Image 1 (cartoon, rainbow, N blue to C red):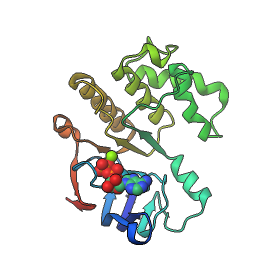
Image 2: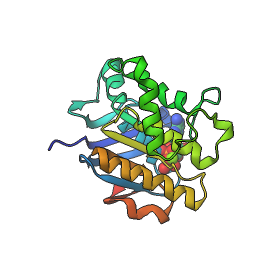
Image 3: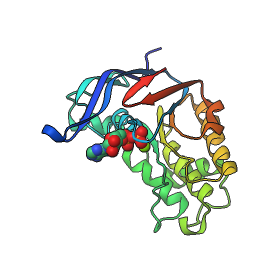
Image 4: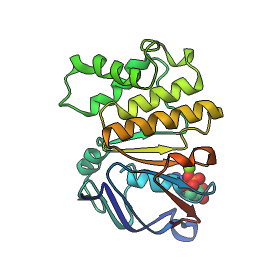
Length: 224
Ligand code: ADP
Ligand code: MG
């Protein structure tokens, strides 16, 4: 089966001239269909930078990055946009819009998919909110949800379009240990059901057991 992501010798720096700071150094990795991979490493080691590159949220500077069979080095904006629409993102802070209800926040992610009819938005959103255990919070606003519930809405938003790849950047770091556990268990279960690949950045060694594989990052270098 072809890989979901295949990165080779990815190198990335911020800034220019004498302020140039190297952040990623010759990172090579492959993500296969259906696997849950944890990426851990100290703060500042380059984990978020790597995730944003893999997620086509940043342009590749050097090396090769193949996502879903397409090279992203030198790719056009339309290709980057197309790649982003195939990925579900979950961030440290849920980033929900407070003026939208739970289902409206989830359905916002469907707008990237013109083939999905608007009249299906609510049913699809409700189905995935049920799957993350929020059947009684469909019409609730973020201000009336706990931290764990908000993060579960963010998971639902990332998964509602059934992406092939989910990138999660420290999704449990603002949660108590039980809510954090629940959130990763839900991610793992839904990913298994859908055959989704998950790359999960975490500092939290209580959740390492969800991984099929653990990668360590240090000073911009990846250690298996
Ligand atoms: P991590 O997620 O592992 O904590 P990051 O990828 O966020 O690491 O950051 C890696 C390094 O790159 C840090 O030294 C950080 O200060 C720097 N960095 C991150 N984003 C930027 C940016 N937009 N401009 C300049 N430096 C940045
Ligand atoms: Mg980070």
